[in-house]
Length: 192
Image 1 (cartoon, rainbow, N blue to C red):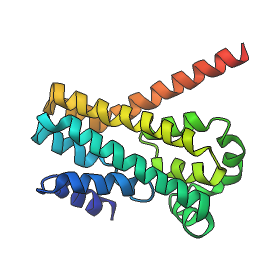
Image 2: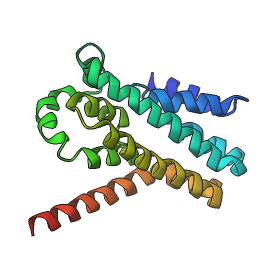
Image 3: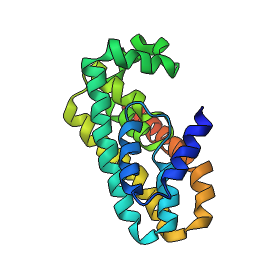
Image 4: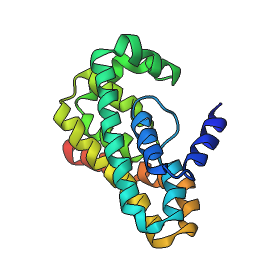
Protein backbone atom coordinates (compact mmCIF):
# COMPACT_ATOMS: atom_id res chain seq x y z
CA UNK A 1 0.00 0.00 0.00
CA UNK A 2 2.80 2.42 0.90
CA UNK A 3 4.50 1.84 -2.47
CA UNK A 4 1.31 2.63 -4.42
CA UNK A 5 0.87 5.84 -2.38
CA UNK A 6 4.48 6.76 -3.14
CA UNK A 7 4.01 6.13 -6.89
CA UNK A 8 0.77 8.14 -6.88
CA UNK A 9 2.58 11.04 -5.17
CA UNK A 10 5.39 10.97 -7.77
CA UNK A 11 2.82 11.14 -10.60
CA UNK A 12 1.30 14.24 -8.96
CA UNK A 13 4.63 16.08 -9.37
CA UNK A 14 4.21 15.93 -13.16
CA UNK A 15 0.64 17.28 -13.16
CA UNK A 16 -0.08 20.85 -14.39
CA UNK A 17 -1.58 21.66 -11.00
CA UNK A 18 1.38 20.24 -9.10
CA UNK A 19 1.61 23.25 -6.73
CA UNK A 20 -1.93 22.59 -5.56
CA UNK A 21 -1.14 18.90 -5.21
CA UNK A 22 1.97 19.81 -3.18
CA UNK A 23 -0.10 22.05 -0.92
CA UNK A 24 -2.63 19.28 -0.32
CA UNK A 25 0.05 16.64 0.34
CA UNK A 26 2.00 18.97 2.66
CA UNK A 27 -1.20 19.83 4.53
CA UNK A 28 -2.45 16.28 5.06
CA UNK A 29 1.05 14.87 5.74
CA UNK A 30 1.21 17.07 8.83
CA UNK A 31 -1.77 15.34 10.40
CA UNK A 32 -2.35 11.88 8.88
CA UNK A 33 -0.88 11.17 5.39
CA UNK A 34 2.22 8.90 5.41
CA UNK A 35 4.13 10.31 2.38
CA UNK A 36 6.23 13.48 3.01
CA UNK A 37 5.91 16.47 0.65
CA UNK A 38 9.60 16.17 -0.26
CA UNK A 39 8.59 13.38 -2.64
CA UNK A 40 6.70 15.97 -4.70
CA UNK A 41 9.07 18.87 -4.07
CA UNK A 42 12.19 17.15 -5.40
CA UNK A 43 10.92 16.33 -8.91
CA UNK A 44 9.08 19.67 -9.12
CA UNK A 45 12.23 21.66 -8.31
CA UNK A 46 14.40 19.55 -10.59
CA UNK A 47 11.95 20.17 -13.43
CA UNK A 48 11.76 23.94 -12.81
CA UNK A 49 14.64 25.19 -10.62
CA UNK A 50 13.54 28.81 -11.09
CA UNK A 51 10.46 27.99 -8.97
CA UNK A 52 12.40 26.38 -6.12
CA UNK A 53 11.60 29.12 -3.58
CA UNK A 54 7.91 29.26 -4.52
CA UNK A 55 7.65 25.48 -4.21
CA UNK A 56 9.33 25.55 -0.78
CA UNK A 57 7.04 28.37 0.36
CA UNK A 58 3.90 26.47 -0.70
CA UNK A 59 5.14 23.39 1.17
CA UNK A 60 5.97 25.48 4.25
CA UNK A 61 2.62 27.28 4.48
CA UNK A 62 0.54 24.18 3.78
CA UNK A 63 2.57 22.06 6.19
CA UNK A 64 2.23 24.53 9.06
CA UNK A 65 -1.51 24.84 8.42
CA UNK A 66 -1.77 21.04 8.35
CA UNK A 67 0.22 20.94 11.57
CA UNK A 68 -2.41 23.17 13.13
CA UNK A 69 -5.03 20.59 12.09
CA UNK A 70 -2.92 17.91 13.77
CA UNK A 71 -2.71 20.12 16.87
CA UNK A 72 -6.51 20.50 16.84
CA UNK A 73 -6.93 16.72 16.48
CA UNK A 74 -4.79 16.24 19.57
CA UNK A 75 -6.47 19.03 21.51
CA UNK A 76 -10.10 18.33 20.67
CA UNK A 77 -10.38 14.87 19.12
CA UNK A 78 -7.56 12.85 20.60
CA UNK A 79 -9.60 9.89 21.79
CA UNK A 80 -11.77 9.58 18.68
CA UNK A 81 -9.27 10.52 15.94
CA UNK A 82 -5.77 11.19 17.30
CA UNK A 83 -5.32 8.01 19.33
CA UNK A 84 -6.26 5.67 16.43
CA UNK A 85 -3.84 7.52 14.11
CA UNK A 86 -1.01 7.19 16.63
CA UNK A 87 -1.93 3.55 17.35
CA UNK A 88 -1.80 2.76 13.62
CA UNK A 89 1.75 4.13 13.61
CA UNK A 90 2.69 2.08 16.68
CA UNK A 91 3.21 5.15 18.85
CA UNK A 92 0.34 4.83 21.36
CA UNK A 93 2.17 2.57 23.86
CA UNK A 94 4.43 5.35 25.09
CA UNK A 95 1.73 8.02 25.37
CA UNK A 96 1.64 8.52 29.13
CA UNK A 97 5.39 8.70 29.60
CA UNK A 98 5.72 10.95 26.59
CA UNK A 99 2.98 13.30 27.85
CA UNK A 100 4.75 13.90 31.17
CA UNK A 101 7.96 15.04 29.49
CA UNK A 102 6.71 16.45 26.21
CA UNK A 103 6.05 20.03 27.19
CA UNK A 104 9.41 20.30 28.97
CA UNK A 105 11.09 19.68 25.63
CA UNK A 106 8.17 20.62 23.35
CA UNK A 107 10.11 23.21 21.35
CA UNK A 108 12.83 20.68 20.59
CA UNK A 109 10.34 17.91 19.82
CA UNK A 110 8.53 20.05 17.26
CA UNK A 111 11.81 21.31 15.80
CA UNK A 112 13.27 17.81 15.50
CA UNK A 113 10.12 16.29 13.98
CA UNK A 114 9.70 19.20 11.59
CA UNK A 115 13.22 18.84 10.22
CA UNK A 116 14.00 15.12 10.46
CA UNK A 117 12.27 12.08 8.94
CA UNK A 118 10.45 11.45 12.25
CA UNK A 119 6.71 11.60 11.49
CA UNK A 120 5.77 15.25 12.02
CA UNK A 121 2.11 14.26 12.41
CA UNK A 122 2.92 12.43 15.65
CA UNK A 123 4.33 15.62 17.16
CA UNK A 124 1.51 17.84 15.88
CA UNK A 125 -1.11 15.59 17.49
CA UNK A 126 0.93 15.26 20.68
CA UNK A 127 1.39 19.02 20.88
CA UNK A 128 -2.36 19.52 20.97
CA UNK A 129 -2.95 16.59 23.30
CA UNK A 130 -0.39 17.77 25.86
CA UNK A 131 -1.56 21.38 25.68
CA UNK A 132 1.65 22.88 24.33
CA UNK A 133 1.13 26.65 23.96
CA UNK A 134 -0.22 27.22 20.46
CA UNK A 135 2.13 30.16 19.79
CA UNK A 136 5.18 28.05 20.64
CA UNK A 137 3.89 25.25 18.43
CA UNK A 138 3.26 27.54 15.43
CA UNK A 139 6.55 29.43 15.72
CA UNK A 140 8.57 26.23 16.08
CA UNK A 141 6.69 24.59 13.20
CA UNK A 142 7.46 27.54 10.94
CA UNK A 143 11.14 27.43 11.89
CA UNK A 144 11.47 23.66 11.50
CA UNK A 145 9.54 23.31 8.26
CA UNK A 146 11.29 26.35 6.73
CA UNK A 147 14.68 24.82 7.57
CA UNK A 148 13.70 21.54 5.98
CA UNK A 149 11.95 22.75 2.84
CA UNK A 150 14.21 25.70 2.04
CA UNK A 151 17.35 23.63 2.57
CA UNK A 152 16.04 20.99 0.15
CA UNK A 153 15.04 23.73 -2.32
CA UNK A 154 18.40 25.48 -2.00
CA UNK A 155 20.39 22.30 -2.51
CA UNK A 156 18.34 21.32 -5.55
CA UNK A 157 18.45 24.86 -6.97
CA UNK A 158 22.21 25.03 -6.51
CA UNK A 159 23.29 21.50 -7.37
CA UNK A 160 20.41 19.99 -9.34
CA UNK A 161 20.14 16.28 -10.09
CA UNK A 162 23.38 15.11 -8.37
CA UNK A 163 22.07 16.25 -4.97
CA UNK A 164 18.82 14.28 -5.34
CA UNK A 165 20.41 11.01 -4.24
CA UNK A 166 21.97 12.71 -1.23
CA UNK A 167 18.68 14.28 -0.19
CA UNK A 168 16.63 11.13 -0.61
CA UNK A 169 19.10 8.84 1.17
CA UNK A 170 21.19 10.81 3.65
CA UNK A 171 19.76 14.23 4.56
CA UNK A 172 17.37 12.85 7.16
CA UNK A 173 20.27 11.13 8.89
CA UNK A 174 22.33 14.34 8.85
CA UNK A 175 19.46 16.35 10.35
CA UNK A 176 18.89 13.68 12.98
CA UNK A 177 22.56 13.72 13.96
CA UNK A 178 22.52 17.53 14.08
CA UNK A 179 19.50 17.57 16.40
CA UNK A 180 21.05 14.89 18.66
CA UNK A 181 24.28 16.87 18.91
CA UNK A 182 22.42 20.14 19.52
CA UNK A 183 20.16 18.59 22.16
CA UNK A 184 23.14 16.83 23.77
CA UNK A 185 25.00 20.11 23.92
CA UNK A 186 22.13 21.78 25.76
CA UNK A 187 21.96 18.89 28.24
CA UNK A 188 25.69 19.16 28.89
CA UNK A 189 25.38 22.92 29.50
CA UNK A 190 22.34 22.43 31.73
CA UNK A 191 23.97 19.83 33.98
CA UNK A 192 27.52 21.26 34.18
